[in-house]
Image (cartoon, rainbow, N blue to C red; front, side, top):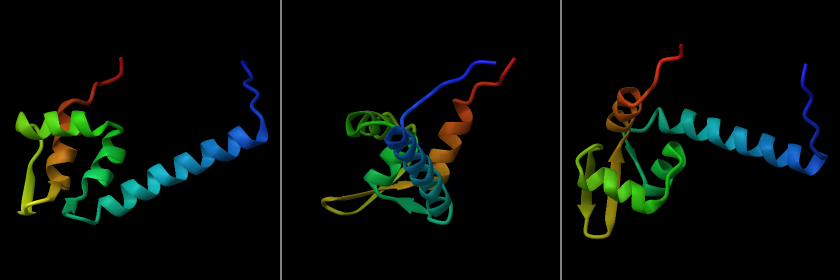
Length: 88
């Protein structure tokens, strides 16, 4: 058995990140449209990568106002499923 030891502050940071990630998943699963920030966190990507997904048509988006872009949660889930890899 392998053991990994980390200090208390690192453990607290890690737990906080896990909680944030799962709370984002839970909140976003109830929403139809996600903000760019929510989408970036959900996919764990940067704004440039999100832009590339949008312009290549891999995820759906809407632009209800000139400076507002929202991303379709269903489209993001489909993108994740299409790119999921099965284990051995």
